[in-house]
Figure 1 (tube, protein in one colour):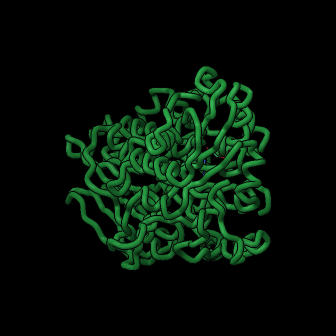
Figure 2 (cartoon, protein in one colour):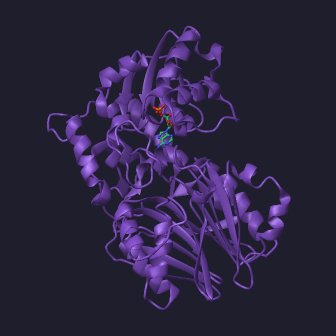
Figure 3 (cartoon, rainbow, N blue to C red):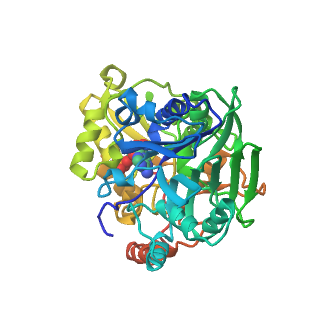
Length: 493
Ligand code: AMP
């Protein structure tokens, strides 16, 4: 898919609740989704199961506050169990039919709904097989496949149908599901995406993508869902099962670098603290003589603070961000992305005028943001701009749910560090090494070994086969010479 923005990528946010007051359930899901808004801004939806096990749903395109702007929609969302979803997708797949949660009718006694965060790597193959067996799809989303597999299963109990379906899907997936009386959570064998369980004082249970959503609804953190695990919450409390024992935690390192909110804690690692350490280690690896450290708001501020601490260069608020522009990365064309960045960011001139500035960002993907900011800082009077990236160079696409699926769009896959420095107009450029990233996050896998992280965007080491994506990836990797031994990664220039 050269130079084309691929259509279906799901870096999304999930929230589910069991056992809340029937008049409060939808409101709590709304509040939880609101705090997960950073994980998806294209659409939002809520499903509530009523006491007769009927499904009630409201969903739409836009931010949570837009989709649920009319209070009357909550009158139709009454019940003790519900799930919600915020969706992040790129161009091409707009339309309410792709907004989750999806709902399914299994038999006269069972309706269920589900919501997904991640990307299935064998979706095309499974979809073709399911269609040949008569399944009819209501969306273009890979997330619907799990529901169709559950419907097709010959198992009797819902949980057995689900486990059978989970064994067939590959890639990155965190799911929340609700039946008439249960809330269920499931995570892929590598735990690529975060998913946590909490409990409120009224006894209700919450399962959601990040702990910031637990805080939002006053739920106490219980634990993270484990790779390969299915968690079932019903009148018997919490029980669990595994659909596979072949597990190896490899959580997406971009969750720590960029996606998650800094007040979240993933696998007992504070996102803010991890970013501070990334910044501090970046300072040790890429020192520079400068007057002030500034960060690109908001996702880079923790790393910029860390860089300042690690380098003993003062930190200041050199840039501010408009609260009213959505994330620019998902804009479908380069022109729109550039305009989006310019509307979003402005410089506090007095902080940078006549100074040697260290500009810390969490990552460079296409280079749009850094190029624009370097120009802006220079126009605002900065004497020198030294760009420091608090993560390694992004050279390989992600197939597990982050919206970077083609090597062609990654500037570091196509250019050396010194070329990137010139393209973005910086006086110097430095990246964090993969080793320091691993050190900064300081995690172990679920067997107490290794890094517990997926770092494939930086080193091309994918923790699973790529299934439907393998041929496409091999072709572009070969074209770009990514497999050649002497194509080593420079870190700074
Ligand atoms: P770019 O302008 O294309 O180089 O994008 C870099 C900016 O996008 C960084 O400042 C990050 O904060 C942000 N970013 C990094 N990865 C992603 C992603 N997968 N989706 C959306 N935004 C991202």
